[in-house]
Amino acid sequence: MEHYHDNTRWVIVGAPRANSTYSSSVQSPGAVYKCRVHSNPERRCTEIDLERGNKPRESCGKTCQGDRDDEWMGVSLARQDRANGKILACAHRWKNVYYDSEHILPHGYCSIIPPTLQGRRKPLIPCYEASTIICFWSLIGVLALKNSSRSALKYDLLSSVQHKYFGKSLLLKDYKQKYGEEHGSCQAGIAGVFTEELVVMGAPGSYYWTGTIKVYNLTSDSFYSLNKEDVDSHRYSYLGYAVTAGHFSSPNVIDIAAGAPQHSGIGKVYIFKIDGVSLVKSFQASGKMMGSYFGSSLCAVDLNQDGLSDLLVGAPMHSQLRDEGQVTVYLSKGNGVMEEEGVLTGDNAFNAHFGECIAAIGDIDDDGYQDVAIGAPKEDDYGGAVYIYHGDPTGIISKYSMKLSGRSINPGLQMFGQSISGNVDMDGNGYADVTIGAFMSDGVVLLRTRPVITVDVSIFLPVSINISVPQCHEGHHNLNCFNVTVCMLFRGRQLPGHIELLYNLTADVDKRQRSQPSRVYFTQSGSQISQMSRQLSLDINREQCQRYTAYVK
Image 1 (tube, helix red, strand yellow):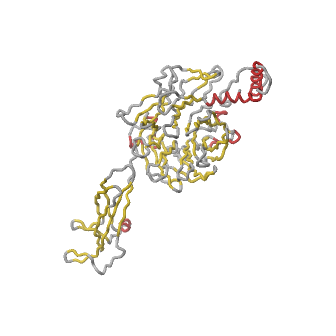
Image 2 (cartoon, rainbow, N blue to C red):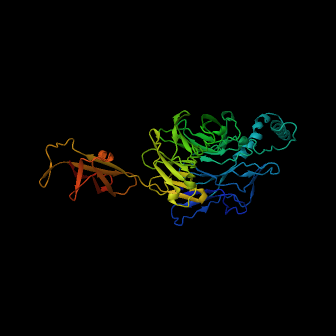
Image 3 (cartoon, rainbow, N blue to C red):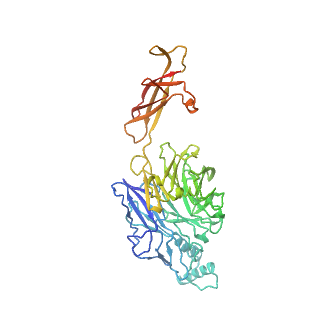
């Protein structure tokens, strides 16, 4: 993931199966690394100290004892959408083992890291916090109305909790979550997104893997709750497997999108709007093929520059032969209305898993419209590939403009395209660059976007040619001819002041394409040729012209 603070640029890399230098007593907790882009000729990366100590277990609340072994820290990373933004790093396999004799609860854990990558971190355990709030504090408002002593109030509270959640047959004791029940196995942080004010974490294991999303407001220090009636309660739907956020309903309002790739076997995607402290469904769409994993990757991006976010939904196991994958594009019409624009398929390669990852990468071709990168990490026998698509006034150009093959960059790369990050200018040339992960080869590739040169070409020809009156003479021969004037100008941002441009001037292109003899030709060293190759020196924003004589047979 690309990150910047002031004038320093880093690539932030999650290594969820790694051992940690700062937590050597913990078994493979995972780690998050920072790789400085400038002043780093050896391309070294160093681990970020998340300041969690060296103990495998950590106290996290009255009925919370965290187990960090194999927690997969760095499984998801997100950057706050603002200048000098913070970073979200998550470990969805982090466990609460307070009741380990009965239930091990994979709540999931996230950490908010300061923009400097140093200093105090803010831990988030949304599923433990949610269970505490649900089980105890929802009843306080009622019980506080009673004129009771402190001990009587405590007994009333626990008795009410017991009656509501356990029934009268159980002994009075603290509420114990069970594996799968409520948020007991929610695995928060398997996916995450970070807006200017909101932290969104997917929790696909809640409610026996029906799934949910956890949305935390940094300003109010509070969580929004999902209106469960808005979501079909299908177990093992994995809602929250993928999340994103965007301006789907209005340019000034942030909405949340979440995927449920196993819903009814075909997958589903939802968009939720924030209403007070609740998340209310405003849109839903289902996949079209069993087992396609529709909704397992999402990307919010304004493709047509209308101020509204459009939505790309990946289905990486959509199959004609085997898991070629595809991405469905939905264009936003405002007020929660989304229209399906079409599907993207890359090269439709066998077992490519096209759509495994989708990322907005900024306007890399400098045409005023946002562009998108789509990963196909298993294409080319796990070598991987990434496809670049350009936005335009109608939405998105359905044919990709560029294909990046992992093996063409480095033959050792595997699963290139499993993760993609962009939309940050890493080298200061005014253009957003793209970072691509290849996790099976423990590699990350930073691709620097070159400045875009726009060349304006004008060709001036006579309106008509009088072939009955030859205009040229060669020796004793009178020939029909006319002048061709070619003018060129180049422009763009962050460009050199001068370039040398090589170009070809071709006569009778249509006839050549149809393999027919040309009637128009040029001369060079006494020979007739149909194409001229020349070099032209150009200064930026200054037009230069060259004149040629063309002959007619």
